[in-house]
Length: 160
Image (cartoon, rainbow, N blue to C red; front, side):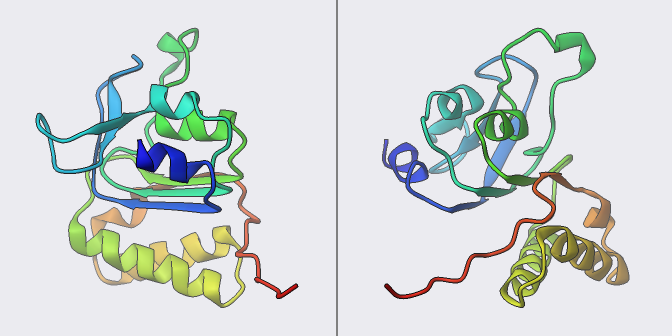
C-alpha cells in the first residue's frame, strides 16, 4: 500500500533488494518489499501497471529486474518491470538481466549516482559504472540494462 502510493509522487525510484522474473504472466515477476518468498509482500509488474503516475527514472538494482518478454509472448499484457515502467511514461529504466552480487550492485549504484551528481547523463553514468566494474574484474559489468532516456539527468532544485 505505502510503496504504491509513494511511487506516484517520486521522481526517482531506487530499489535494492530481491526481485525475480519467471515469465510473462502478471504474477510471474516481482519485487519483494519486506523479506523474501514466501512470507514477504510482493510488488508485481501488474501492480505497477495500475498506477496512474510513476517516477521519471527507475533504477531497480535487483536480480533479473531488466528482463523482458520474448517475441513468443508479445501479445500478452506487459508485466515485466522495464516494459511496465516504459509503457507508463518513465523516462529511463535501469535494471539487471541476471542475478547480481551485492558488492557489484553497491559499486555500480555508487558509480552511477556519483556521475549523475556531477551533472552527467544517465548513459554516461552507466558507461562509467560498467567500466568501473570491468576494471575490478566483476562479471556484472555487462549485467546492467538501460532502457529509454539515455539523456536523463538529475534536475537541480531551485528555490521559489
